[in-house]
Image (cartoon, rainbow, N blue to C red):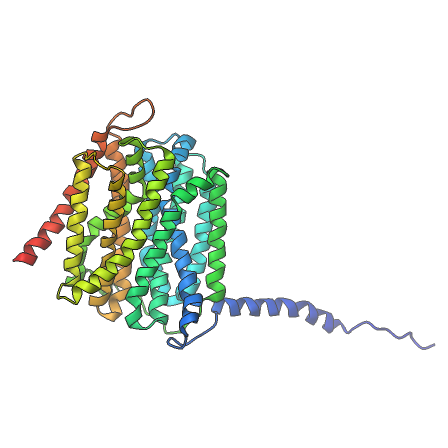
Length: 442
């Protein structure tokens, strides 16, 4: 008898069919990871807006939101972990320490792998840190999670700058950088009154979980939309380049004038302005959130206004550093009002503090315009490193000074504690300002 016909496929066909799908999936993942290669200069204006500026600006927005969040969450964190002022300052400033520690590795990674892939990976790290912060129960757990957030968000500004300088014409870069800083200010504004309103409907832990989801969403947006330039040979890390950066006269002169005021702005704005409003004028949480919201709006308009003012002044023969020095002088005078315990219109002091603090961000544009092109990326990274190490020291040191006084039964610290802390900040900013003024008028 003849054997019955069979419809079974050959053995090799089954093996091939089971391996085809994983192969296609791997190829698709590789294509996503490599991204769509485009030649710089070929993107249209709308394509640059939607594929480059908006994704990276959203990352910068999230970075500022998470950086400034503790100013509003401070009462909940103090109640959750029974924190002292020194611990609260140390907890919040661990973000700056981790951020600073990541700068040099991030700079090398951006040159080697590009901003798209680096930003995607680090935003996932930031999401993990945000989830860990939501689950923190004591000072140690919260501090480790906060440091992980700082490390994950360390590339947001520099990756945006690198992407924008890659895809934008050189003459448009300064104005778009102002819009990028304004996007960060909008994130800081969101961390004030909108966060306070959100806390009426959810716990701060659930808020952090939603922000972790936002980090993942922005990471995927950058991975899927942002273009990739053609691969270039990797540039080796050079200690001589770093030494040349730090020894460059423009870098030194700019850092001596603006570095410490910039660290004061970051360190105080992210935490202690809110505590000053609660302890000295005695405002409630709702009023504090509203005033911080106004202050962050001042950051947005101040960032744009500083760029316009600088352009107007340079056309009339002023150096950019001269405009920055005038702004730093006003910034220090304003802090003297905190030291003197000025009582008239106390609610305006934080808003004006944040408005004038925008002047300190001129460091980036001054150095980028003056440094050789081969050193611009490293110079910005080194500047970030110094700024965030200083912001860590200011934020933690401010809490140490305030902790030298006893709190009231309601947990408020006396006005003299803040006066002494602000006096120390003024003292550390005066040498750089006086040195510049002496050199300028001589």
